Image (cartoon, rainbow, N blue to C red; front, side):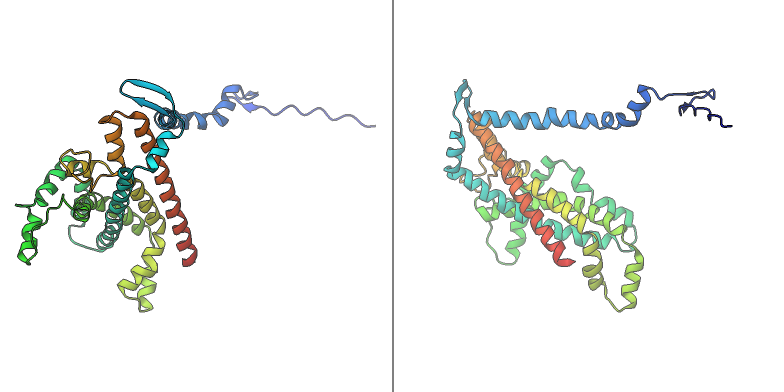
Length: 320
């Protein structure tokens, strides 16, 4: 004789009183929907202050828009004019030149400073805090001080050059000299920031690797080259990318170096693309053309970033 087994009750969620109930919609939302709710503010702000201005600038760049208002759709006429504008290409050359002079020495010096701060020193905390001083210093104050340092007649730099027999240099008059002056401002301001990033990456490296290398007879330079640099490569790539983005948008330092002259000198010798965009948009009130320049800044930044990424991957593959 056989009997049917009793049906098993459906599994339900426990309640504080001991009873079991089915999970409600709020619990399902808390499990699956709340993560999206937490990250939503970033995307909302990015859409409002990032994507919308970018799209609106692209729309304005396709129109003839000046101080009198929107004159209508002109297609790619602003971009055609841009590609034939010698002042724009001069600004591109200036920006790339400043990018090289303000990135390569800055990152090399930051790497050296981080390596020194990673060693046991007296008052180490004071030195680590000292590299933060340029970051918190007002950029206007930095420009005033460096403007005095690079003064033609009474500047400290020309005074030091005179001691070794070099004639005074008008730092604002020449292209290369103005690049050196502006890039020195950028290097002084951001070297400490990058050094702290490198220092944080170095602190994460196990000391056992250095002890093993020391037992094998490797000196400090060889340890730095074969252990430190390869293991902080992600930090190196990050700082290079951020420096490239900042260099392509360089505006404040050259503007203050020229005492507010947005043309970057009498011959536009240190005018960057951002300064040229500001000049066209807010001095000449040619908003359509200025928007085209702004979009070219974006596209050039993307191109330089992609080239930097390809080089980084190639170096990483070669190292492996």
